[in-house]
Amino acid sequence: MTLICAECGKELTREQVRKGRKCCSYRCRGMARRKRVQKVCPVCKKNFELIQSRAHRACCSPRCGYIFVSGEKHPRWKGGKPQKDAPRIKVNGKKVYVHRIIMAEHIGRDLLPSEVVHHINGDNQDNRVENLRLYANTGEHTRYHALNPEAGR
Image 1 (cartoon, rainbow, N blue to C red):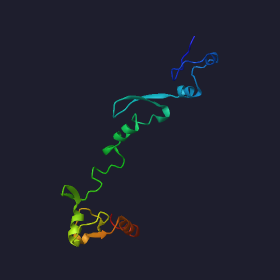
Image 2: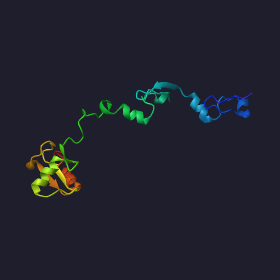
Image 3: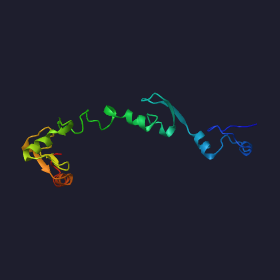
Image 4: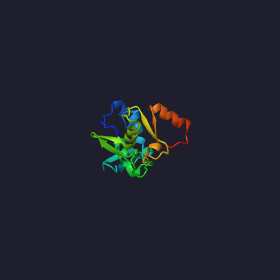
């Protein structure tokens, strides 16, 4: 007579059967003891099984979990505004921030890629020359904000 492991489906040895075991190993025995919950993933609609201690999870995988909480469902949702809401225009097929073009015209040369244009009042929509300040690199710009924490970003 052959018995099969209640958890993984492997055939039990004679010794395991003689000792009255229903599982092939301690690992399978531990897994068999856990209470399980059946759920349906809200993203991919796949049926999946969780142990009781993880029943709070809504989705079958991290990928589905990310999709499930993206957009309006995400706790840090800001209403759909793009992160960088500064206006851009196309120049020679590339999108360029308007404040960089205005600063380049003001100083009479093209800006280097390392140069940073800062909005003094923190409003990315306000591209007046008197509201813009040029920094040679990101380090200088970061240093300014470190020394002036109340300054607009």
